Image (cartoon, rainbow, N blue to C red):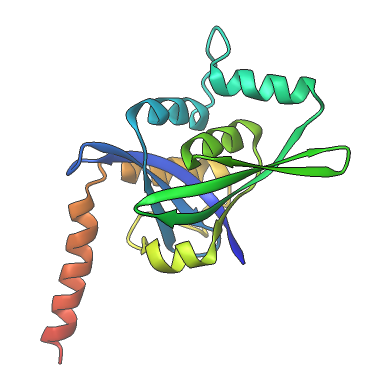
Length: 180
């Protein structure tokens, strides 16, 4: 089974100085962090912010080729993690035929965002690697508009520090032990 992602944004892990993408699972407070390279982060940021470039970048070129050949991106799935490396598939469709392509999650996410197609994460990955992000300031009832959710989540992650999450869990654990 798979869970749908409803918010995708990124920040910088100040401990490792590496870009991190957060995929929030729809209708939950669970986020899946995926660390990516700086180059991929640049292209992903351009896609998230819907920034246009004067000439097609590699992902734009790929989308243009697929479109000219009659293929449509259907969805992406993040399917596995081995040795701290995530794996994903891109689902293409042409005349009712489905093709599945192996991909790095960063490339798949860029294509999904540019094409506005659904992103899914395998349940097992959410269970094993998801973190509680309920302390991130996203007001579900204020406005269901996707852009507002994305903006609020991005504001939080602009100052993202993995120690913030560690402190949250560490402090929460201390409170529990002090109350017993």
